[in-house]
Length: 332
Image 1: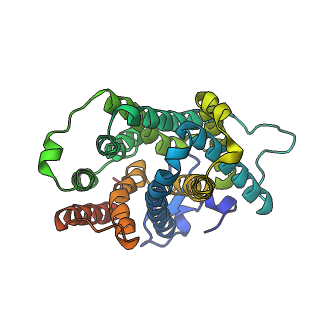
Image 2 (image 1 turned 135 degrees about the vertical axis):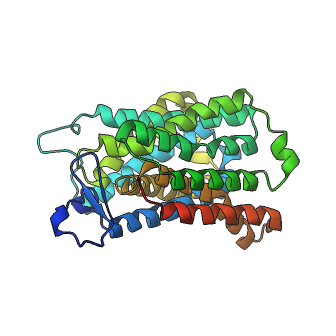
């Protein structure tokens, strides 16, 4: 996957494109994105969903030993450092000559704040709500992201795409509730779920805003400043947890989990999300979050922790089929 400026700005003259090449014209910068670039965006989001899914296992190992806010703030700060090193060794400039900050730095503060709110509300919600119910709220994100795509980018959501989103959401919810209809019907919306819903709305707005606020910067540069802004927001939120943590005497599992979360689940996933957001509509980008329960099923089964029952597996299959339909749906 290229990391130079070409990954950020894919420009072509429409008259030079083959007649049978599917293209998408971005409403900003006059970008024309061909079919191959969009396919790369889809692959990026599949890898994104896989890395996010694996992070649940690593996070569960570290969670009992460290304040979650402190862990998140540290991982985003380290991820920003990693992204900065990547930029240095690949020749990507993080700022223009003679500048200390990038142009319009408030753009990154907005994006970083959105992600910061998402993680803060997630931690707060999990104090008073179950992971099952918060996971159900998470499945609303693609629909919310599609709505923001219409609002910010004038993207169109075709009936086919809308139906696919609804089917995928139904399959994901079925997986989250382990195929238990009684558990699904007994779901009650409480304070924790409403708190997390605020974070989900912020996360849903993130993908379309990446494309709207991008000024043609390389993905590495854009990712660095967004990660740094998010680290600042989370550091403010988790200041007490950071100060009170005995960083030198944590169990080894925390360091290993933190390393995975920093490199793969933070730095790389931010890169993948922004890479895909510049090539695909927001509704398609965030819909890959529906794959998370399915990937978790596979990871848990392969690792020897047991496979789910056929009813749950069927829900996962429905989600995958709906996403395949969505992936090939016209963008309106």
